[in-house]
Image (cartoon, rainbow, N blue to C red; front, top):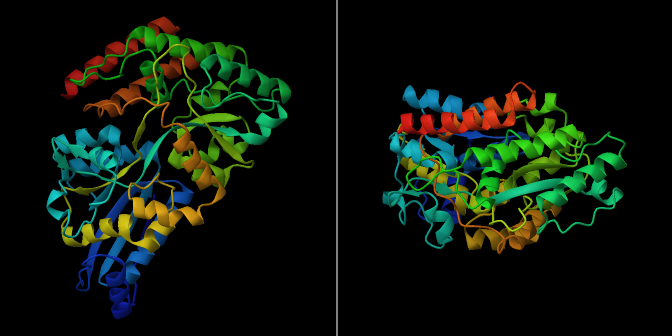
Length: 427
């Protein structure tokens, strides 16, 4: 974990600058402090700490403490802080866990601040609504995104791959993996092994015509969904066209250790807002493809709020916290620092301001986002309480399949039973 607290000294100048950039920016007394906690990567952390510096220079009376940790440990620490009533004032929230944390009473609604100190009237309605629970706004969208199969464009070109990467199928995917592996003599495999990625598996379930979780929060995915998923990856492993199993069972590895980054593989699954961070550590230029479709199946992908900022139950200085939140989505200097790294902003004004300054990879992200609009399905309902534990079970049981310790059919049945029990117990 990295922590950083800095105090800007530009009092009068900073206050004037803030007033010119933000609506009704309050003048703060000295010695006020807030904590901001997020999951990150080197690129995200660099931008976020730059935002903290900029905010503090414009609001010299507020000290912002930034706390960052990788996704794999983020939710464990969040759960610990929630139980200990020591949450950061502002926390980065994921759509998957939003309802769970609201129903725990861990987040405060934002509605009373809207139109007063939180200026979001012109934002896209869909992304904003994604942060609502039971009609109240608990999470402010700081970017929208979708799933993406990031690929190594050099490897694709050298292997002569000309597949339509927006409309391709899982059969096409398997053939691409084989071509890449053959062309490189096995030095580069076609893809990371996605057996343990429940996020990609959920697209598979949707392609089969179901949602992973039904309207009442119960598991509606079937053992056959799971078995067919794990069997496909078992076959690809046996063919030797995906990354080694010993790498696969390293759960939630940092982006810098992914096959795309180190050159072991030509493809892997991410969220589109991660492309900036991936390109920062990848040796070759990256490209973007949809999650392969199932021939004759339903759309699996969807566009979702990539992440939110939420006001925690434990926030003491809500006025300062909301001023910081408002700066995140409105201040031109701050939105310029953030760019698209966390996703596509839901403010039309911010998008227009960013367009002329987009880097090559940011333009790739926007173009990809535009290309998939007619190919995606509806946003699924938020996962129920216990979803984090279900994810852990998927990786744990799937690991036994990857290592050859359990047969696919048996493991699939065990996972569905465990998943159902987890969500029933969590309600």
